[in-house]
Length: 58
Image 1 (tube, rainbow, N blue to C red):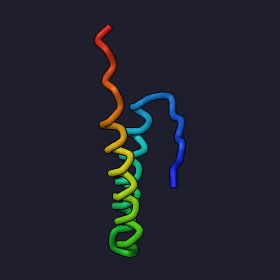
Image 2 (spheres, one colour):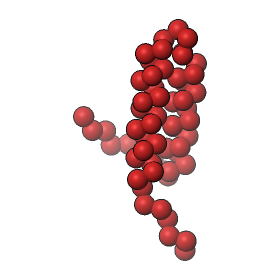
Image 3 (cartoon, one colour):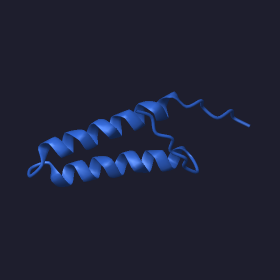
């Protein structure tokens, strides 16, 4: 399955990753499987963010 997510910039993706980690922390004790799924999704977004080309220093 593929998802196309359009955000204004890489900072927005980083914020999304941080929000997913925060959400995972919030449910860790009562829903560990959900926390694991949220962290996995955050890791996937983070990996793709790392693959984006770096801006040229113009």
